[in-house]
Length: 83
Image (cartoon, rainbow, N blue to C red):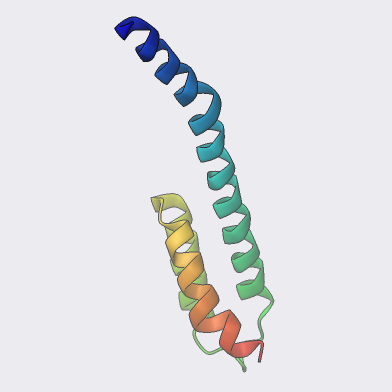
């Protein structure tokens, strides 16, 4: 019975959790690209820290912190400037 439970758990990991993690990763990548495009399109006169945010978002993309930094950008910059 122990081997059956272990096999069932392995199948659950393979067919449920791995695709779910892949979907979440793709969603964060799409959100990061959306925030990068938003930052690039902003006018320099309305958004003084544009260059800084571009550097932060690009470095975060390669360092693995893109999801967190994109969420911070969304709430600190995009939401304020879109009002």
